[in-house]
Image (cartoon, helix red, strand yellow):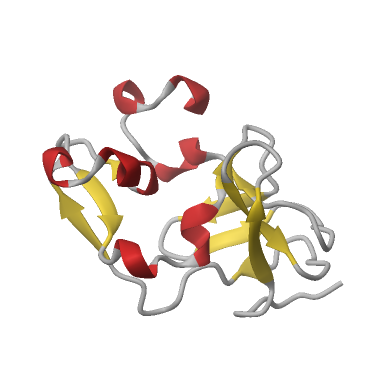
Length: 129
């Protein structure tokens, strides 16, 4: 069971629930920081009308009605592909990143609870609730 992750800890594969998902390549111990985003990962605020509908799912809704998106959609980090589940196996700590909520086994898909990302209640899709 590893207590550290790096750029060789995860892989993209067909998700068990929808589209593409992120899977662990080795066992990860409870509480481990998950290296899903590079330190130089950049985001920017955009008007909804300026983001193609197909890319909006990689963005977060903001209180002001705009979107917080990856700066470069053609260079997204693996963390942008983590799918939502109310029974997530990772948790988000603002300003610190993602951490394992429990031991994660090699081959297991990673899930985040998108409700932890501070999106406005009224703009969340039904599956967030």
